[in-house]
Amino acid sequence: MEKAISLSELNQNIKLNIQKNFSNNFYIVAEISELNENRGNAYLQLIEKSDNDFVKAKASATIWASTYRMLKPYFETTTGHSFQAGLKVLLVVKVEFHEIYGYSLSIKDIDPSYTIGDIEKKRLQIIKRLEEEGVLNMNKEIELAIVPQKIAVISSETAAGYGDFIKQLNENEFGYKFYTKLFPAAMQGDDTEGSIIEALDKIYRYETLFDAVVIIRGGGSKADLSRFDSYQLALNIAQFPIPVLTGIGHDRDRSTADLAAHTSLKTPTAVAEFLIDAVSEFDRYLHELSKRLYIQVQGIINQEKQKNETFKSDLKLMLNSILKEKRNHLNVSKIVMKNAVRSVIQNRQHSLSLYPQKLRHSFQKLMSKEEQKLQFVRFSLKNNTENLLSVQNNLIETYTIKNYFLNPETQLQRGYSITLKNKLPVKSIKELKKGDLITTKLIDGEIKSKVEN
Image (cartoon, rainbow, N blue to C red):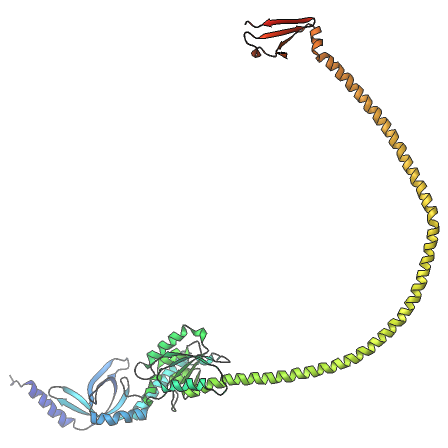
């Protein structure tokens, strides 16, 4: 059995071997998965992923403060991207081993050109993905309002760019009125993407109130612009139902947010000028339209005046001709009417001379007809009266015979009697009771009786 050694001895041997075999610096490509700063030092976790996105290698790394102070500004200035987790970087490292802290890498330098290429590669991948999904130009296809005056603004309330934008709008030389509503969002740092998307969601609830959405920022480091190269942010902008204008403030290639927007401009003031120009263009169009309308109306008025003068002249000649014709016609009509009246009067006089004779003849004829009617009425009245008298006589005879036979005296003569109680005929024994006085009337006298049973 070999002699055992201590852990410190083992680690010391490892350290000596690493120093012997890994004394040179190495160029490595890795992705920064974690980045923490403490007392000027930067502590990183570096990883390498397989094609299926699994971590296949991992190492801790350190950039000491003396180096980090130079590397970070150089990297961010060159790449235009903040030094942060998620970046793929080309590093110059030295392998180190500490008996207590173990294996780590000390970063000596960074090649920003590699990261620029990787960032651009990712940026192109985002653009390609948006194109393949057919959404990259969706927001561009939305028609911007002819007069965009109701603006939803996504920016930081304290950002200088926001103040410049509002001032430029409110102090425009034409005096146009713009109505803006700020939806605050972070314009730098890790919260940029989520904050802007959240603001877009809030605006979406009131989409009918706005003509356009403006995303603006001003100031800040150039590295902060990398936050706008985001697939999710570009996707939300591209699919937004209102035109989105960007004024992020940069001179390099446009971000994916710019590419997805309806219109991208360099600065917040450029966005303000764009909106002012849009309203001014419509104002100029209205002014030009007004001028053309005025010229056309003046031309129509002049034409109508000329037509009116010609019409007045023609009308005067026509009226004179008509009046002359009517006068001649009137004179002829007067002669014709005079002759007609004379003829009518003569005819009426002749008719009046014949009227007494016609009246006498008609009266005699009417009297004859009325006399015939009167004779007929007399004859009818005589016959009807005789018939009526005959009928009435027959009725009287009939009633006389009936009266004779129905007369109580006649019944008494035939041997019948009439029983009376209180001078009223008794028709039933139910009308009598014991002790009642009754009278029995016969043809030759009356019998007084008292009811016993």
